[in-house]
Length: 167
Image 1 (cartoon, one colour):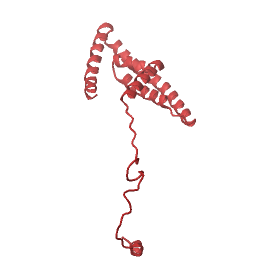
Image 2 (image 1 turned 135 degrees about the vertical axis):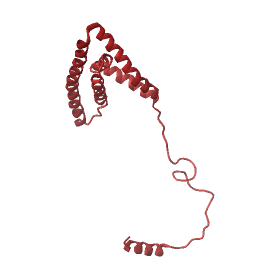
Image 3 (image 1 turned 90 degrees about the vertical axis):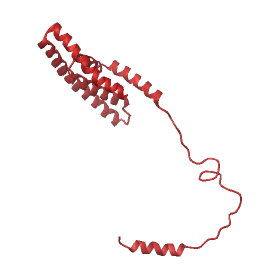
Image 4 (image 1 turned 45 degrees about the vertical axis):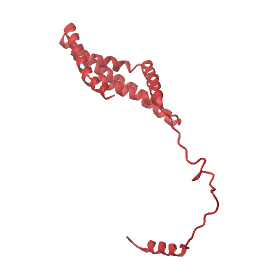
């Protein structure tokens, strides 16, 4: 996971710069800058629209007492899409804009869900059961002979003395 993040932080900017140089060579500097700015503006407007719809849907589901897992996942995808669109470059814009499409988010949700289901493990721990100890059948080999001392009066007196003290 750490290696993948390192490669992403190094590789994505290199790819973006290479694509920007190629596009700039084809259409020129100012049209390239204009496209980058335009994608950021359009992306932020779409993020606002879909983000507000997602918040409204989330609130409705919570009011009905439903667990809004799909809506929360969509919200996270939209936040990620916004971050990608604010990153200058065409490659991140393509991925960011694709996250605005509901079928892409649905496919991603299913893929991530399957991946997490494979990695999850369920363990059940129980207490008690057969044998001696709490929850066990108890009993034993017979009576246990002990010497004892009655301390109930002394314990009660110590408790009242302790309760009267101010520490």
